[in-house]
Image (cartoon, rainbow, N blue to C red; front, top):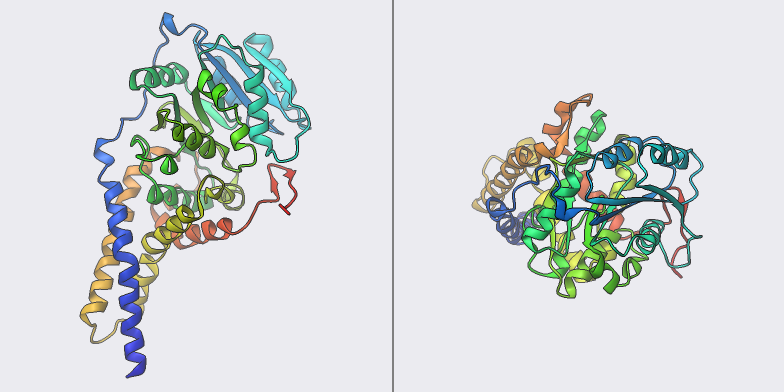
Length: 396
């Protein structure tokens, strides 16, 4: 009798945890039909001449920077300059930039100063690039070395920002997947963002829920100067989100839009590297209050991690006389799982699986959800000590 009461109490507790989480998730998904459409490549127009300074931070990117350099070279006259800020790469990255410069004089190579105490390498490189960029440019565009810009990306980005009145706008990419493990794990990790925040193309109502992507990050130069460049995000391992939220909190309009049609990105090689590197920053703790972080962890646990184990447990044990409480719990989790599998069709355009081995595993990525949520929990309670080959002291 006691065990039965405990079992019923556990079911009631799960319902108490999951019902509000499902309501929050649905409230976000219902905004999807009203979101800004994905950006399309756009031709530059004369008024955009020399309006954008592009800054690319690099550290040992020789294996993947060539498509980025080629893509930026194909941008039109709206790009005044492309400043590659290298952090003393040892793999020949500077040589590739110098070779690109011979064909396109807009490219400039600089080496950033030694990393000061309290700074993370990426925001330090971007900050240096900003300080060395032309004051005649209206816009600052940060691009990562692993991106592959399509022709018309920069013109489309600037025109959208001008037409929509954004002071800062960043884009979600189309991710290039190649290995079976990536096809299975990476979409589950991406889904942790979609569960916690509004989808790309929906403006956040408050600064603390703003999303951003530093892989393609456009900001008015005057706004960036007003907030001190990247100094307000200097110690953040998610500097893009931290800076975007700081800018939004000062009353500037910030947007996060779908850029799957205008640039691609090859982030990491294989599932292990994806787990280690991307999973390390996805918790966004450096850009969030403790209350917001715990809210997100509750939502992920209740709405993304629990449904699959609960449904599988029911199917494995098949109780002979299920109670109304148990049937309610099962129905709720089946409903959430249906939503989860349906979302695969929504995010499919965000993935290029044309080169992938085992690309079909993308459709089974919901089975990686508990693992993806576990990665967020592990990251949320751990301060990184190394990033992109750099080592950082633990805070005292």
